[in-house]
Length: 358
Image (cartoon, rainbow, N blue to C red; front, side):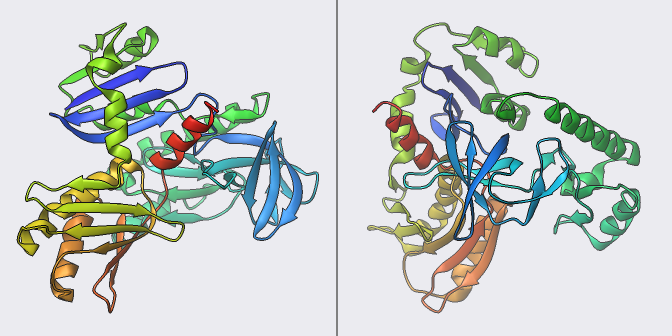
């Protein structure tokens, strides 16, 4: 696979290709509040379902909370004028402010640390025996810790060291000045780590980025000019944003992003229903990845609405994306599923990119 990174004045693009097929795509905007960013905020007023807050000159919506952490990291009751710490959950959308939460967390490989909270939670994927073993490790932790699936392969020493590092990071966050206390590192470095074992080529037009990428991929190629044009990145983004994708069999997949759910419509065209649906499963997983889709999702497969067949297709889709949760097949023969929100939705990011030009 190839990782292509381009740093421009208005955006930063990280794209992963398998041959000519786009497999992953991130666009970072320089002034945007990215998901997971930790900020100081001032509570402005209560609104339905939460609070309006100010992060510097930006406005944001904070989810309903009775308590939060003050700017020094101690619990405090939320009220108008309160200074609180918040963490970005969702980037700004077309008609919505940035969404933030008073529940501030720091994620490691095996643990998620929540300062000044109590309790231990476990990934649903962990076995009962693993939960029992790991529960003993964190019985007296004193803070809130969520134990991730990766913890099952770690030693007690490794887990203790990770928790120590997360606590040290939290203290460093509190020591920062200004409105923005902590931001996740640029997507290109996260992507490079994720795909490190399968990358065969890495290229960037940023000398500073190249230096860091060489620690992951020593043969990183620095292309100081013309990389965007060589890789046709503007066209790649345009195709990633498109609602329709053609399937190899001659059918198509339509992706519609609505306020309520993401809808996938599989059209067989002149192909056999089964073949179109099998190919659509792979394409749906790819579209979820490159578009940054999440939330409630509905799939309308081609052909007869055989619940057993559709459920089997759902199982295949779940294997391609372990973060998907298949809810079942509706009475109308529609596959229903959900995905927890992670990265910012590509459509929202690009809309903010275009609005910045206005």
